Image (cartoon, rainbow, N blue to C red; front, side, top):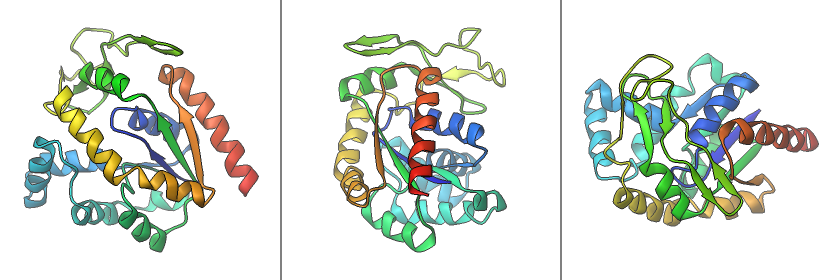
Length: 225
């Protein structure tokens, strides 16, 4: 099963990809995680990535594809995968199509004002990258409880320190959303025309969202298989 998760930054697709990849038994390939790992390594490539991240800009296609090609050489890739953060523009779609076929693209949808509030309340573990959220967002049919650690400021998973990333602020988020609209949103039209797109409106916490997404994925993939 080869899946692509798309949607604006902060919609939660990384969290859903992590949980769903474990439940379906296929790896998550996240450009965000790969970029952060490369940046931490201190390599020349990592330094370039860090500069992009500090400015709240997307890392260049050339660098993303270089990291992605490294990842897909690993043996677990052949079982299927969930792509999170790639492809992000039509140029990357064309490159991806030369490498493999995609079964389904899940497009996660959430209003922009909710995304900004959600990202501003995000806390990330310095050690393992686990993500928490301190806000309880209630608006219309949206009810998203906070994702709090058992002990304030401490990661449940590894005991690492939780912090607010520099790029998790309203100004940077607005910039990232503008870039997303310009570069990534055309993918929605492209995959919809191909009959591969499934819209999913996020309105609750991951424990409620994930089972619904898995059910819809399995129905769609089996009906097209």
